[in-house]
Length: 444
Image: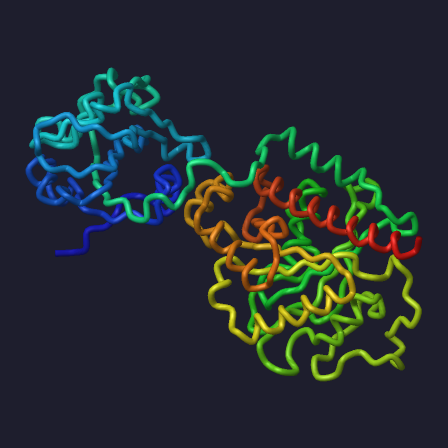
């Protein structure tokens, strides 16, 4: 017999996982294979813990019901304050799903011998490929729930695994509105620095090869250009694609004024000796000695006698904030040598009084719930745990860690992605003000 496979697409499964707050779904029952039969449903699904029933019709609706309780054929009304009905249409995947809770959590479903019976929706009705629909305990508009199409082309039941991976409330408040996006763009565009001689604060991105340093610049630049664009080299390779020290300025629109920040990109960090960015070059960059388009030589740091060495850098040439860029999904794979390098860079930046942040990239790839709905990034227990781990490894506070999703595969801008990127840029500007405050105190 061939393997029984899920009808859900990857995108649909991610959408369900986001709704359920789980890591994954394991298929228990598939009516087209096992039969549209209540007894077989119970044979496959009884005492399996939290489950979700997923029904499909020819109108494109994918709808069903979740319960956190066991099926056990007790012939009783089961109380479950976590139970709910849901629906979305495969032709409108960007639309938020319908979610309906019981009006009486003491009667969430009837645990009988027939198919899944949530009173308002009864699946495998009379052991047929149909659903009985009667809004009552669960109040819904039948058109929104199933398009009044009660004939099923498939019915599946999944065990819900890793439930609770999404927190009930976000632990960091973010406004996901177009008004907030505009407010952040206006705040960044109108930012003035605490040092009159500096028009553009310089922020240095440092991190392992492939962490997304260049992609972050491209992504932020895209937000202000109004379309996804690529200027800095990006991609995946065993060694750093960035081999020069580059400084990138940005404008507020095609003919807008320059933004008050310059992103400085470097070679990626590597485990091996004489590979990747060297701490001596890192120190020279912080002090403003290394100029744009300098070609790194990992086996030999820049020497003071070199023509490329800026002997008398001014305040505007120095680095005002360092940002460590880490791929969220690869954090646990970083070697001890890499953490030792990062710690050494952090000590040097501390000695020079340079503020530091952490940018956690690719949060969507690291967590399926976040991939399905970016707005859950501050509800994801996994993302929260990764933020705590990087804080512990680098000795930084949680307020210094900012998660983002870069534009790497997208062809069009996304408002939620923009808001995360703009929040990160705002935190960088705020950090530079700490540098200028300290500088002004020393001058006084």
